[in-house]
Amino acid sequence: MSTPAFVWTVGSLSLSVQLAADGEGRGTARVGEREYAFRVLSWQTDGGLIEWDGRRLRFRWAPQASSIALWLEGHYYHLTRVPAAPAAAARPAEGGNAVVAPMPGTIIQVSVREGEAVAAHHPLLVMESMKMESILRAPRAGRVRQVRCRPGEVVEMGQTLIELGE
Image 1 (cartoon, rainbow, N blue to C red):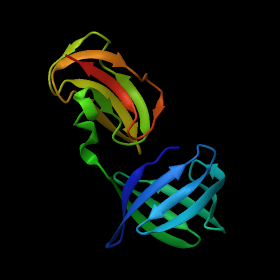
Image 2 (cartoon, rainbow, N blue to C red; image 1 turned 120 degrees about the vertical axis):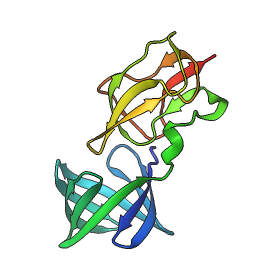
Image 3 (spheres, rainbow, N blue to C red; image 1 turned 60 degrees about the vertical axis):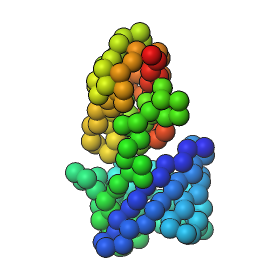
Image 4 (cartoon, rainbow, N blue to C red; image 1 turned 180 degrees about the vertical axis):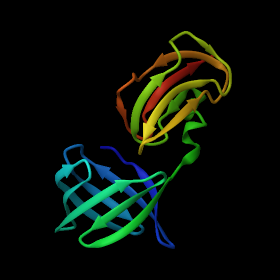
């Protein structure tokens, strides 16, 4: 089960949001202190129909430069997405050897090969999320032990992408 975490800003109100989805369109969303069950009933590129806490809701959305315009049952929301842990890409996971995805997205380019020596801050890969490209860099000097992703692959937040060795 994936568990992306976000901070969504709606006007002057900011709420923490954690999603737990089963990969088949069902899951739960914790918004602030409340938990809601959801199920995706239909999905198109720009909208769809969801069941949210027992209610069926139609929505349309449009990604913008650093936000999302959301129309939900006749109400308009301007949502600015901020990753809950923005430093995740800059620091290795436990043990100092793993470079993890800071957010869900698609791998665009892998710039290193297994066995290659890299300096601290060397570009390792490029990923796209919400139509924005991010360069993930080596958090320290080392040798690429294992590349666990490839261009075109969709990855989850926290997924190990590259392992570094000494």
